Length: 341
Image 1 (tube, rainbow, N blue to C red):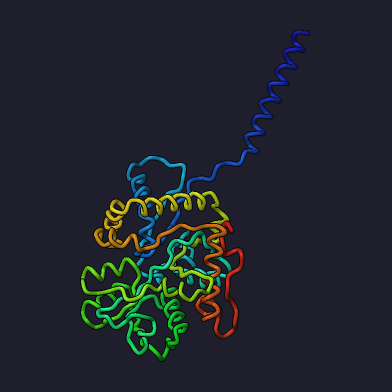
Image 2 (image 1 turned 90 degrees about the vertical axis):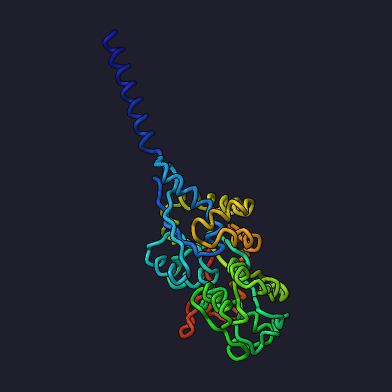
């Protein structure tokens, strides 16, 4: 009888161990740490990311193992450097002009998702002189500008048109490849009027103390009362990366939002980091940060804001959001474009 009892106990123990082993197999393993390849443009988008960049670099230098994301950051001078790498899968997440996100969505057949609005309006018309007091005063003038094919071009064309100026015949827009070239043109006297974003307005004013902000294009947009807001930049990701690494995307958004909040609350310290990453000079960054409108807006609020802006651009110039001029294919993105909304 004792032998029978021992055998029963042994059987129960085996079954219990087997059951425990089964439970362990059914548990969903945590996602392994992911190295997220992120690109930002040298301007407000990169400025808002510097705390995340700094924390990431510090963690890498310490050599400590991490259970969360690691990051590989790229800073670019223009969106032209970022778009091909994003479409070819060499980047996972990128900060790009707001309308370019829609263009990339169309070019990749829905392969791009917008995670957040990260920069509101930062565009200004600056002048060496006092002749420009309104949009109407730009008629017949030459404006040095950069950002052709992205938010700056379409915002300027829209505002000119809404103020009775044909952007093709009523004004001359001298397109430069980078914002710094516009600053150089102002400094050399080759241009007296330019469209610049922050922090390049501040950069130009450090070289040209008499340079004045003639028009705030965000205010000019708001004055139209068209139900939308002027946006500059968004954070996008490859849709397949979002699908494969949902936890990594959520962690990035949390860390990015914290970075933006810290940058806005700690101007002097943030400016030192910005200078250290050679985004812009630290002294310039400290002066410019309060005017850079750096944000991290996600979810339904992001969708409402961005969809309204894209609708205005689409109504004015369908190609600006990615519609093919010849076939009519493409256009405003679908709901799958707006992450978390």
